[in-house]
Figure 1 (cartoon, rainbow, N blue to C red):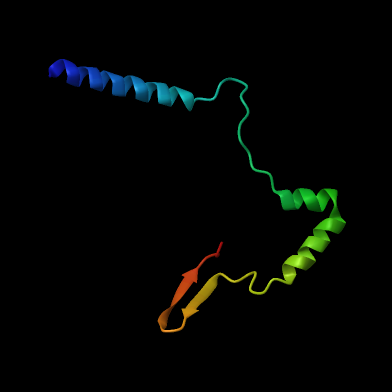
Figure 2 (figure 1 turned 135 degrees about the horizontal axis):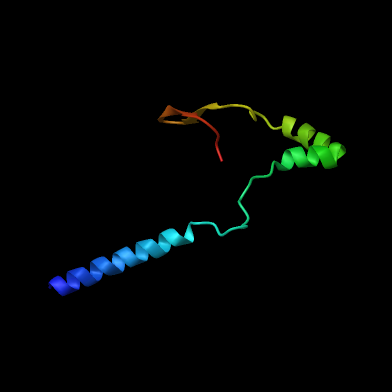
Length: 84
């Protein structure tokens, strides 16, 4: 029983060491970074960016952060944030 326990313990340790080694970036490896596509579009194609902004302005409640969610027969609920 002790052999089985020690074997499982060593297997878990070996697996966790291998998993940790995967998280270390290699020398010269690419690092992830975000790109703001809206800024890029505005710089490269201002006319399309303006058209996109005009369309976005037509969306009702597009800047709302506090939402009241209602359904007949149920108490209203409130959500602070964005609805996706």
